[in-house]
Structures are given as C-alpha cells and as structure tokens.
Length: 146
Image (cartoon, rainbow, N blue to C red; front, side, top):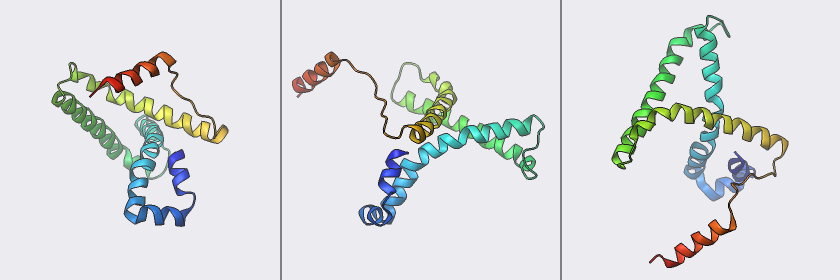
C-alpha cells in the first residue's frame, strides 16, 4: 500500500517514469494485492450473512450462489495450483496446499492491520528481528560461494 502511495503521489511524474503500460502493471500487481486481501473478508462476511438468511441489500440475495461459487472455485483453484507447484518442485508434503485458505485469512488480517498502521503511524516500520550473528554468517557464506 505504501509503495503504491509513494509511486503514485505525483501523477505526471509517475506516468512519465512508468508510461501507461508500466503504471498499469504497478497498479495491477502492487496495488491489487492488498486490495484483494482487504476485500476478501468483506465478501466472505456478506456471503455468510446471505447464507444465514439475512438480507444486506435488495440485490444481495441474487448474488448468494454466484458469490459462493466464486469463493469455492477460487479456493479450489488456488489449492490445486499450489499442490501442482509443490509436486513439480518435488516438495516433501505437497498436500499442505489444503492450508492455502488459512494463508488467505492471515493475508487479510495482515492487510487490515497495515491499513490501521498506515493511518495511525505511517512512518513506523516493523522489521523482522534478526541477530547480528545471523547477518554475519550470511555474509560469510556469500563470500565463500563461487
């Protein structure tokens, strides 16, 4: 989200730098990922509300079956693609692909948390803690490799 905000704050400069196709790629890849993660729980909640028989809009009731089909199809496709990629890479446990929907949930939680942090503390940066010995070992291995 912050990358998209930084790159698109000056529209003319951004268009000159990336051109139309590059800007479309930036928005389609960098901006669409968090938007997807933010929208997914909303769509899931509205679908669950409709399945439980509650009406959230006059047109919402007609969207229940397509929404369920889209979510189930998306989850199934993501599981199949992840399983196939794990098999192709000869990973030990490709069946772990069934946990992909849980990953989607965690991704959404992280996206909503980042929206909150961007609003409350836009200049805070959480980094993964690493010990200095880990960094030194990585540098030494990099120097030794051909």
